[in-house]
Image (cartoon, rainbow, N blue to C red):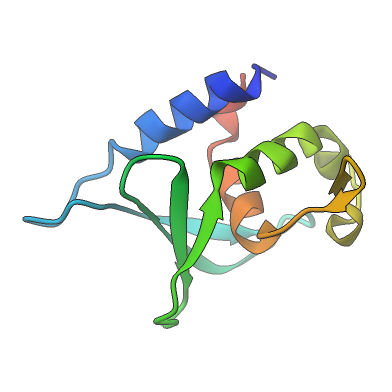
Length: 116
């Protein structure tokens, strides 16, 4: 895997390749909600405006949830453990439970090719 900063730069560039709606300042992606067991349980709307925060919506939810670069970095640090079968509820980095996994896991899985 490449260092996280390399991955993060690649991810931001990739997120900015999706077409925008006319006059919109945001890039919108629809990615599968992926689980370790290989099931796709719906779709996740991924919204990027630039910078170090990615926003998400699930299904018909009107609420937007944000995930900061740090949350992606924490998951990235233990990605190998997760892919090899670690239970997501037990994922930690430096003794702290990881947050926003519902959003960061599908994003990393969808853009996993950028890790190489």
